[in-house]
Length: 160
Image (cartoon, rainbow, N blue to C red; front, side):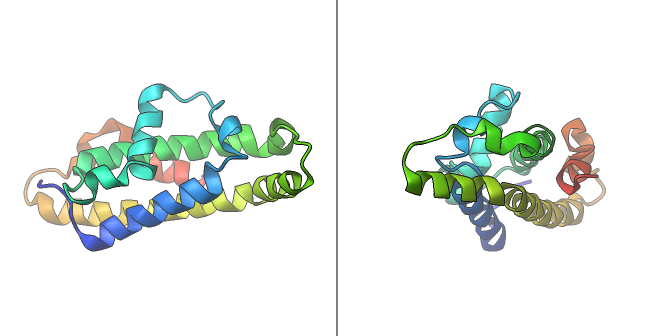
């Protein structure tokens, strides 16, 4: 399959990136998030989808790279739900500045909802990519069906 340059898909990725940077990996939550047991390759794949959009905006995305990034993000969502949300407030370091305390508390209180929104955005992108993959595969098997990493992505994103 050629590189994906579809404006709708690029827009979805931009929305995922903006949401992640603003609501998930902001200055209050990033130090705690980086403590999750996620390997460097997975962080790199998450970064491709959430931080390095400019590299791919004009070149396009490879479908398998998008799938791998979504799978890494799904593992992140699952780990954050199980390891961060239960005790996030105690993990965020205290600051002496009262305005920072309020913003920090807001980030911590809204994190579960923002993580769900992130998962929903990823699910929407995945759905569009799966349709594109199936429609363009023809008689060959779709790309996702040949990737073991994609086996339980929907379950991880759905929190099932």
